[in-house]
Image 1 (tube, rainbow over the protein chains, first blue to last red):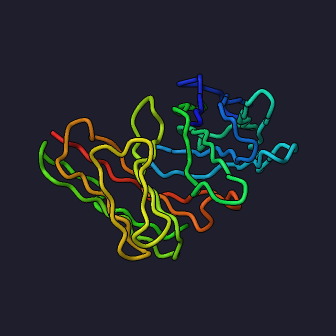
Image 2 (image 1 turned 120 degrees about the horizontal axis):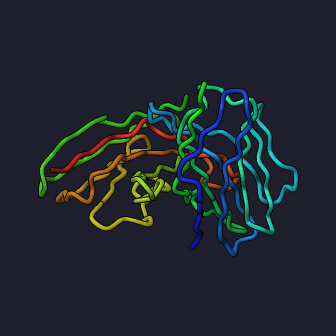
Length: 119
Length: 115
């Protein structure tokens, strides 16, 4: 079974600064996907960024980028130029992909990191 | 936004009563999921469905059952609610079931309190 660990329960950052959220995972699979979801106080689950394990290039979406270290099983999220609207709980999630079939798309989540952006 | 509606949005009930949560989608996606969110645990998979009448257990399925009689509806039932089932419940949908790594889309959640 896969496990996902987010070791930082809470983090804070000043507006316009950069912050990095950590995520590690444990799996014996070689093909999988990794995701970061954001959950603001409204409780919505919003996809932030997605990474395919077979791609060495780190994914980037505007101010959000990841540092994917496959050998170390690490998948950190960097938020640049932090904005007040980035205040939220952030979840790292793992989805395995079975060769020749499907894993049914099930997600395994980390415990979450609460990020607070201060003005 | 993906067309996912969860009902009710909030519910308070008593221990021992049956509870049914509904997830309705308008996207015609094949895969549907129920998760629960608890502090310190993130989201954990309860049950999932990979087609009409095709369901399977997730990580924390004890005390829960599901049914899917139509593509658009996925019901989660607590036969006899317990206080440990107080949680926020999320429904999610996917069109590819992980084959292409497409992310799941989530409903807005149901906050369930069992007294």
